[in-house]
Image (tube, rainbow, N blue to C red):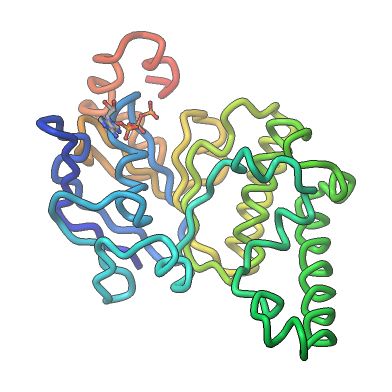
Length: 260
Ligand SMILES: Nc1ncnc2c1ncn2[C@@H]1O[C@H](COP(=O)(O)OP(=O)(O)OP(=O)(O)O)[C@@H](O)[C@H]1O
């Protein structure tokens, strides 16, 4: 379980996260919604160690993880997805997956000279794992394509796939459905549900697409102006007066998105 206590993140005088407190239950797929600028991504980045909080605490399974850098959190099984960086676009999709575990044996000179067989064995195992991940995500046909050349939706699946190359416990997904067509969106939703059910991953999902949230998330947490406004099922959230007001405040376009 992750407990966020009274978290603040200020940029100069601007309070992007302004006293947010919430709980993420182990085994849940928790949705994080809210109007544009509510502070969702900033909250993610603070929890995932990308940004230092101004104040407040993040506790994971009883351990204070506030301000730990991403690589330390990675080793504890807490991951957030990132867009495939530009410089990895010229590597194949399979190679992008194979490089995730890091710290491979081949990196030391000793092993380069004396451990050729072990390196070859490790590479074979990584390759098999990457192929298994690609198959799970139904994108085995893009294994040898350059990551920079596949569609936006396939890139999103690859981002999700990267979390499957290590033993993730909790995965933060930031708008994984943005710009993705319906078919791929449902493939992503199914993959998330299956990973949750069969491998016990906990997910926290930022998403503006309410169908997607409805399909996979329970509970849903709604943020506005850096604070948590409400938590519950999507139906409860949609009926919440404060939530409706927060979305209304940002214009009718967003009101439609929450279905209020
Ligand atoms: N590095 C930064 N410096 C200054 N202001 C920032 C910075 N990062 C975010 N902000 C501001 O903090 C506020 C919250 O941004 P954030 O991206 O966390 O919101 P969000 O809820 O994820 O929005 P969206 O749904 O539009 O992605 C915004 O007003 C944004 O402009």
